[in-house]
Length: 371
Image (cartoon, rainbow, N blue to C red; front, side):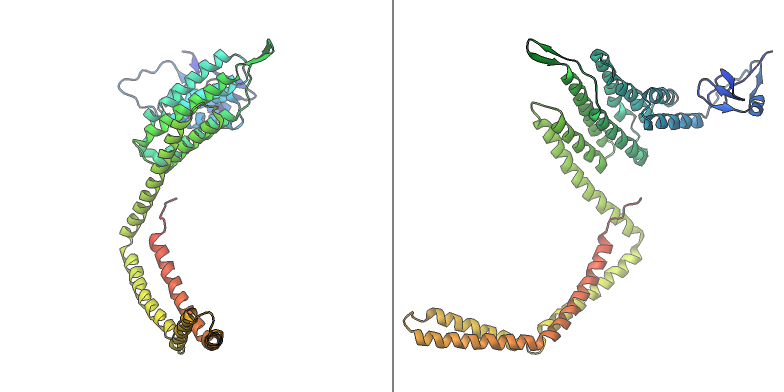
């Protein structure tokens, strides 16, 4: 029987020798002559029963090729490799979106608006099924993909595009707004998809993305009425803030449930410091001379009240009281100056204890987000 080469990566048999290596025309994988010899199979192999084929390495290679093409903005290659990923992993939401996204980017430089509308229709259909393929068990991985899709939808809207414009009877006619509507519809569909995802996986970033796309639509969508979008944005903002508070609380509680001894130690230390704070506050209030100052301040206030009650024509009596007030004020100032070092020392003790209490409170209540 005639021998043939079979690619170990994709199973393709169309391998061509190029520059001393064999290149698979299906996936682009390259093999040396020695590797090619080892791959040669003869005739037909009959296999019975169920065969599980692990194509994860192949899919990963396609993904890397697709991401490199996307990074270079080679949209034809982007579409090609993401299509290969989707063929092998039909539920891969990255491939579902970007296999259509590459075509949408190319459509922006094609003057055929009808073709562009058809391509965007496919992209919208892809966006609409993302929530069906979303895997809540892989929430962290999904977050990276969904966030990237969000950013690329924004980049798509911000891209330059070809549109038709002509002067007819002194008026400029253009189909520019047909493309604006395509961008708007894509944002709306993505918002709906995000809302659906929050029903199965409540995450703060999802609400943030809903807010972001509502704001983009309000800012750039040239809408006649944006009240519904503003309501959706405000609801997402409120839900996101509440969820953030709830999740933060849960993270903190979960952490201390696993570190009970550490928590007990901190709480005991805090209780002791609070007792020390009460004592320090009392010492500050009872610095020698403080009671005398308080008595003088009461005396000054009483004299001021007496001055207010003196009839305006009793000038001499009023001046005498005012002089007495000034004498008391001077005495208060002198006494405060004399005890100022002791007051500062007592105040420093109060501040020191308060700082320690604040440090413990921060430790007990700080977020325990796992990176």
